[in-house]
Image 1 (cartoon, rainbow, N blue to C red):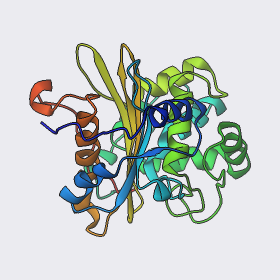
Image 2 (spheres, rainbow, N blue to C red):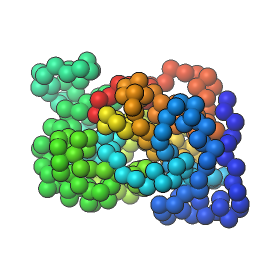
Image 3 (cartoon, one colour):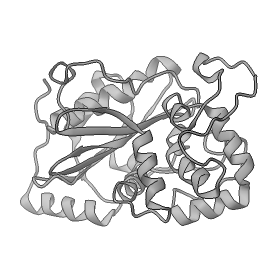
Image 4 (cartoon, rainbow, N blue to C red):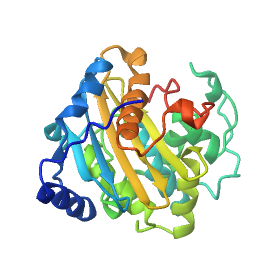
Length: 284
């Protein structure tokens, strides 16, 4: 089990962190000791944690400078994109069949009909490319502005959330996730609840883990939160992936280790294993 590496420097620092978390400010208490986990996995990156449990450790980050830098959201954008598709009527619900176009792709689970749930679980890029085509660039921009998502730019090479100009920072990911958790995004509450259900990864007797991975080819993401009776713990991690797909398991490994050090997530052995992996191969 990882030891608790968080050592607050002052009571003021902890109180300020908690207030910053609530205010979604781009400030955080730097936890340099978390660098041990990045070193363990030989990874360069950042993580932001917003701990809103009653005994909260507040708003924290490793590599705060990088946490404010925007990158392609890659497949983490499927979270808001599912909301956009539902709101626009491009897809009705999680049961509507989305017919496979017959094009063979490198990931076997993509080569079949999908629905909203399977397309999120397997991160099926062609489904969301279809959503983007039907929604259209102007409406995508309007949705991005409504959601205040990153730089709100749906232009550039397709898909715009991987190859194009859309970018978001780890801080901004946290801000978006907090609004989704609280059903405070400018979309139907029923749709927000559905999307939260789509990103469920695993659950225990008194906690639920929700999240989504992403990979642009050079940057890997894992964002989400752990729900507890005393409050949620949000996380947003991004790392460089010079080893490409070999580096993808590092996203989950680093994040879980840090959440465990905070007591926000139990080690795998104590959870009984058998979880749905958040580090499945994903090209976009």
